[in-house]
Image 1 (cartoon, rainbow, N blue to C red):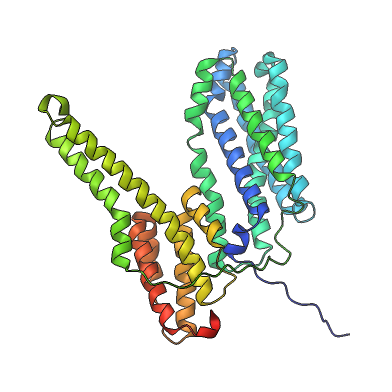
Image 2 (tube, rainbow, N blue to C red; image 1 turned 90 degrees about the horizontal axis):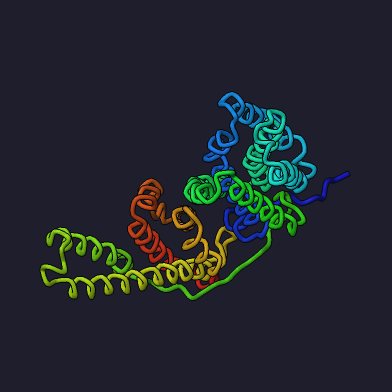
Length: 373
């Protein structure tokens, strides 16, 4: 019998970013990271406050390491069949174990409790990154799309590094650790609430088709980089003036002038930020208008990711550069932009990377056929 089944379409980065399930995983992973990093910071202090020894708290970390084995088992055996329960059940179990200490604070000194707490805690922290990678691979993305999608997920780890700041404030309010545990529970509960509406978390189905074209418009790359760089130049100039006056503006009679200049810098910075959002919106729609592509985000989604998601803007710029190079090769024009230089500037100084993308887009508009619009 002839096999008439159609091969599944490969997911692109834009396909991933256009789904609720991706952002549910992103935010749930972020919350797990925030709660976990915060708890790790003050847990030894809480344990010492209850009279526990260093050997006792070490039992928690022993259980946490053992939890990684359970998390790996769930990821590689259960996730492919029951993806959502494989993430939600460990969250619920960890929340129940952590919540028990709110009713019985004496459990902080119990080695059995600390081991079980560490076991559930380690399971949650292990299953998320492994399961997310498996979900993404199921969509059969290309190397660049998979790497960018996973990099954005990894940004949650960087953001979670700020959790100890807030946790230390909670601990100062009550050194018994109750606010810290409550904060940890809130993170877990919200993560469960985010995952529940997603009927499926794997990306082994067909991506949604989308196309939001805008009329292509050429812009001067120099003008783009000038608009986005002006606030930084003004801030540098303001710092020089402040340093030249030795920090005593009021005594030197320049306080009012400096204040006006600072307000000007603020206005220009806000205007540049708005222009950045506008550029991200327009460039995705214009490239879709010059030639449809499943690799392009809708303009609104692209704008929100660029200004709200950590590492979102560099990832989007890298994706646009790769897309423009593919269009150049397909039209016989060759490579339009150096990916190495684009990657460097995307992370070191994004305005230059934006100008490189704009220049490549301008060139691509010259040879796109009218039928493609």
